[in-house]
Length: 221
Image (tube, rainbow, N blue to C red; front, side):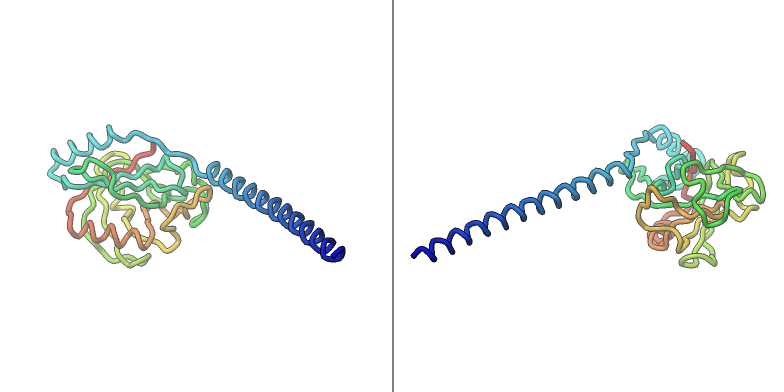
């Protein structure tokens, strides 16, 4: 009987010891998970930019110039390149219906690098390797050497992007572009073309087949 009581006490002691150990381990996991959550929240900033004035002006511009009045594209190169900053806006629904990752030009930096991820260089000059800001009309569908082999000619309509066609600035896809946000990393930079991921281009291509003379407005907020 004495031996049984001793065995029982040993089992009880082991149970409490094991329970305490698991409790400590669970607390540690919770602590680690909490730290991970905090890091994720700190890594990705909240982008809250009011584009309503651009939407209104774009709609008026499209009406005046007999452009597509169902949809238009707004690209904000003032946003970090690791975040989605290519917006598809639906005039009838009066809201953004899709957003994508998009590259900008590298300027004097190395092609394919991400050195200007938070400050895109802007220029309309030849051989600048920079993106241009302003309103573009999306024209003919063509064949590209990049991505899914599809591109769209861009006609610059402002002084800030008047050399777009001469500079061969087109909308195309590129395997190096992620389909998802990569912040705090940046998106690889090309020679000035707005390049998107292959997955994004498939969606954009389908949209542009159904909608002609779409306005693309590139800004730097």
